[in-house]
Length: 79
Length: 166
Length: 387
Image 1 (spheres, rainbow over the protein chains, first blue to last red):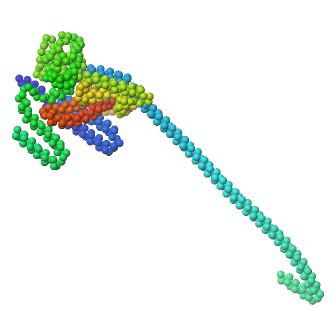
Image 2 (cartoon, rainbow over the protein chains, first blue to last red; image 1 turned 45 degrees about the horizontal axis):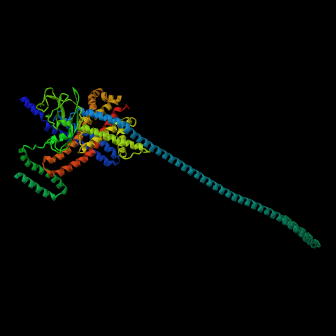
Image 3 (cartoon, rainbow over the protein chains, first blue to last red; image 1 turned 90 degrees about the horizontal axis):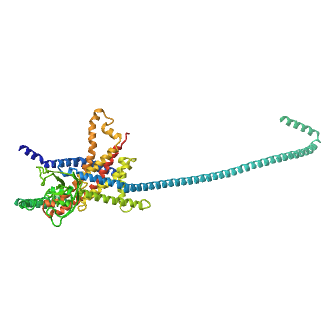
């Protein structure tokens, strides 16, 4: 009886997973924001480097984003 | 691993692999190779054209430089020629001047000598004439004077006196 | 009821007060308040809905899952659950590899049943469709039973090679790609000066971009040519499937590039190519990092080995999660109309989903670019020689 209850209790990870995914999104958002800000500033300082900066900023954002997405996928796995 | 979103399905993996392999094979053979080949060929063509244009430009520049050089040389030559001519002219003038001077000097010299000789001759003649005249005068005087003895003596005396005075 | 009315009146008063201050702020605020207003409206209504039995409550999660997961039939329009007369569903072939050999039948045999009630018998085996997964019932069983977590207890999954909605979509993308690029290649051949025309003219800058901005800087001037076919194929394959997923009607709209099986396969192909093109320096870098003291080398070795696998996993998850997230956002915005149960939120939903769709058009191209770019980067790392 108590074991069954425990099992029942451990099934619903939904809300916790949602909070986890939210935290992952916050982390990713901060990272991407910092990259974006730095890239913008660099572009404003050296407009002739815009193409190169854009390319590397996108790749860096992809790396940061991957970390946040890992969190979200782990949240998926938990539900 | 319950979530259907994150559990891979064998069937889809199989079909994806197959599709991708077929796509890669066909596109590689019938699309990427001809397209990339054509792009590369065209780029090579453009590069070649640019290189030859550059070469032509260089040649053109060389040609212009050559022309410039020749022109410069010609100009220098002309300059030199003109300079030489001017020098020759100046020299000729100065030579002529010198010649004339020398000639004039010579003529003056000749004239001077002629004058001198003339003068000498004139002097000699004058002396002769004076001598004759004086002899004549002296003869006449002596004739007149020597008629009287006293006077003769006196003359001798005067002359002597004069002579000693000299 | 009275309390709600009071709150609404209070908010209207607030809006009027704000009107005089700042028009833009007011706009945003009123937008927000409109949504919360409808929220209240639904709360009022929900009380009535719960009492009526025949109308099922709207389940967003089910709807979204139904749209982003794979399925054995292609739903074109209409409501299949109620056997709505106008519903149109394209049935797709089911191919199963079982102990009795290959079993094939059309998915229409299930009659849109995804609860496992309709049983299809072929070659003496019984099959059911349980939430778009085909299960084979054990011998002598005629009704499927479930455990507490709704897993079937007396059925197992055969190897399923069905032409599902995603596979159908993939074949369609293949045909489109072959058509586009073979036409493009032909247009080069036709012209005497290697100048493309038509679709080739549009595709050439993208091909040149992949070559000059992705392949050459990452792989190097000398070796990039060998990898160009792969990079171009993977870029256009991902891109066209992403774009096809964004188009919301038949024969497109399937979430192929947001399916983990698809991204898993592509990432695995990249990983295998990385391993095959790796040089001595790559392994030296992973197993025995040069220029470090021995304890540090021992410490870094497991990290580098994990990193070797994390790279393709990140590649897989990035594409899957980005595309799925895009679909989920658009579907959620549209679902807002049904959650709030009012037509008045529809303009807002449509406006927002249009906005997100426009962003998604950009995102799908960037995701295809990033997948290609990182693949090229990993190949470049594997090819690196000792300097």
